Amino acid sequence: MDRLQQLIFSFYREDPLMEELLEPLRDCRMRRSWGSIRIECVDAAHLEQMSGLLVHLRLPLAALGLGRQIVLRVPGSLQRSYPMHVPFHSDQFV
Image (cartoon, rainbow, N blue to C red; front, side, top):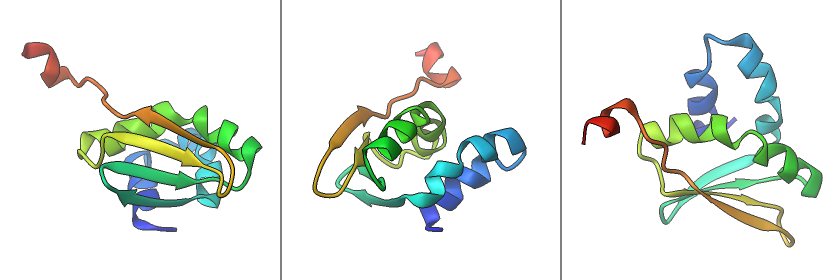
């Protein structure tokens, strides 16, 4: 498991149901590049499964300001980009 995956699982460590929900993330490779968090999926079905988990991935990554977008990829095939901005309670006071 790489450091980005550890960060996400650590963020949800108090919630065993969330850890189970995020299990497909263990099959991915994650890396940071040029303001993006790139997540390499196994195949197109796995990409669809991961896109359903984006809301849970965004929160810990955005809280630490680790990028501007999440890119889900299937090597040699599909690629989808999603913005990462998630408004926090402190944003409501601006």
